[in-house]
Amino acid sequence: MSRSASALVPIAVTRLGLGLWMLARPGDLSRLLRPQGSSEGSGGWLGRMLGAREVALAFGTLAAVWQADETPGAHRSWALAGIIADAGDVAALSVAARSGEVRPGLAALGAGAAVVSVALAGGALRRG
Image (cartoon, rainbow, N blue to C red):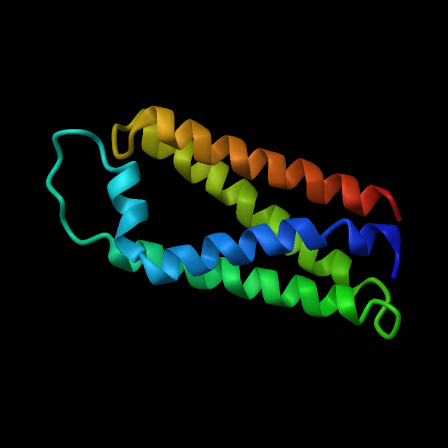
């Protein structure tokens, strides 16, 4: 297994944990991000949708890492998919925070976590 492939394991395991949490408790995410004073609404669908995405990215990345010897470079495609998803999260959270749709502090925390994930995955890809 290459160094770049093995470096993706902690990112994938983190994604898996977050995804399973979002699937198990789908309303938590919307409650965390919702601006104070807004109505509760039903945001469980958001948690389930993002949870499923995170689990899929985690399993795809882990499968590609485990098969890196048979399918060289596949882990790079999964890492890139995670980078694109996380970059989209940063953009969406930034717009939502500016428009008051989500709590700015928590949006910044979520965006920061996505930026860290992008940096780690990018670093893993540069390792070769």
